[in-house]
Amino acid sequence: MEQETSGIIFEVREFCVHDGPGVRTTVFLKGCPLRCAWCQNPEGQSFEPQLLVTTKECVHCGACQRICPQGGKQCTACGACTHVCPQGCRRLCGTRMTAAELAARLLKDADFLSQSGGGVTFSGGEPLAQAEFVHEVIKRIHPLHVAIETSGFAPHDIYRQVIDDVDLVYQDVKLVDSEEHRRWTGFDNDLILRNLAWLKASGKPFVARIPLIPSVTDTAENFAAIAELLKGSVNLREVQLLPYNFAAGAKYALVGREYNPPFNEKTPVNTDMTVFKQACLPCRVM
Picture 1: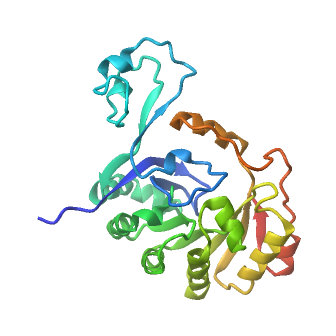
Picture 2: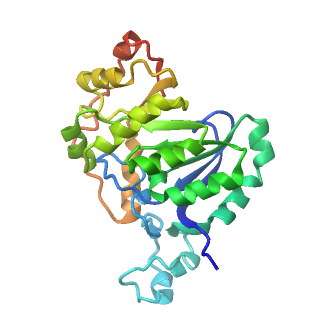
């Protein structure tokens, strides 16, 4: 018997209003190939389940170590310790679900989502890194409206296959300069630019999102390059400027990491939309 497609998600968030039209359910898929220096979801980077630990409320009762199959060492994210902590300091991030299981969960609210003009949005992590799983879920929840939030960092055939399935694309556009993109994300942007060129010509409605990282992505030079890149896109609904999130750094402690951004996060970000307006591109700060 053929094994059913499955994937790993780290959250299903209901009643979302900022991830597409209407009221939506947003599915956050685990795993991302990029390593953006400003990543706001460090728990979404790894493709494997992880144990998230907060020490603020810990009373050092030892319950988690007593039940741990590894004796508190070399955590395998089995989740045993999450059920015994009296303070709720531990939770498992990452659940494997089959396409049928996830589709069934999403479809239970199908009538409400449709009546609100909403639907389902796939986010991450990077949803295209689990493209087969996403593709299968979309087939099962049709005709619900489907949106996707993506960096566009995926092989071109995979990008096209999934984007063909959705109704709306939220496409990140971080940096146009290839070397700067490599410096700040770990990879050049050749794949992303190729996929963006196809998206512009495809007729698929899309929103370009620019994360505003002080002195990195918000420079006048980068804004001008992005405006030139997007100019003339008839299927572009708008450009969205996403302000830097100061609270994101607090999540790193949950996965046992420190957040030390190699830029001055206290520098006010540039929100000047002039270059986009001059290029006749609708733009707003979110």
